[in-house]
Image 1 (spheres, helix red, strand yellow):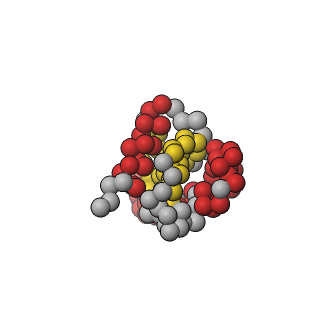
Image 2 (image 1 turned 45 degrees about the vertical axis):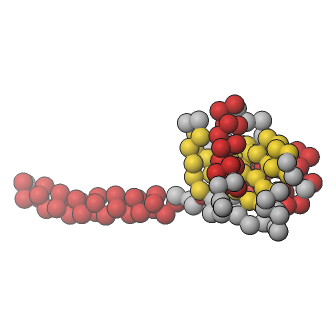
Image 3 (image 1 turned 135 degrees about the horizontal axis):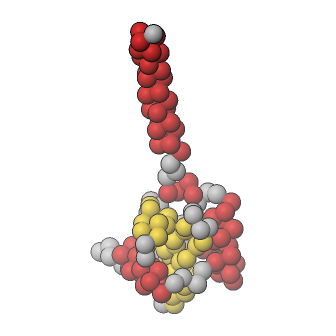
Amino acid sequence: MNLHRFIGAALILPIGVALTVATYAQQKQKQKEAWEYLKEPAFKSAYMKALGPKANTPWIAKRDGPAPEDKFVTVAGQRYVRSAFCKNNDCNNNSAVILYSPEKKVVYGTIYEKYKTTLIGDPPEAVATELSALWKKEWRSQG
């Protein structure tokens, strides 16, 4: 009887290890890149809502100008996807940084248009302060 238990355990153990490895690999594959979140309908909806009247400004609505790579950042203890972009051929005068929380489906941002800065999405004070710092780092630290 002990031999049967030993053989059973010897057969089950490798299967359990294989399933654990497969589950870990699947979880690793499911982890999205920052930019992938910005392709989701939930982002687009939250972004347009946050933009309000700015949704009528093509370079802002489409986010199709020059942009550094999107990345994950932690602001005020929350994880966000940070996206920075600017208007084609006019980055110095028209640029933005937005933060998207995939978990909360909310967008906050700062948009700079010819010497005027507008916050979008009604960010909490700590987030608004960090948005300003992120914008300066992205658009005013070069050169």
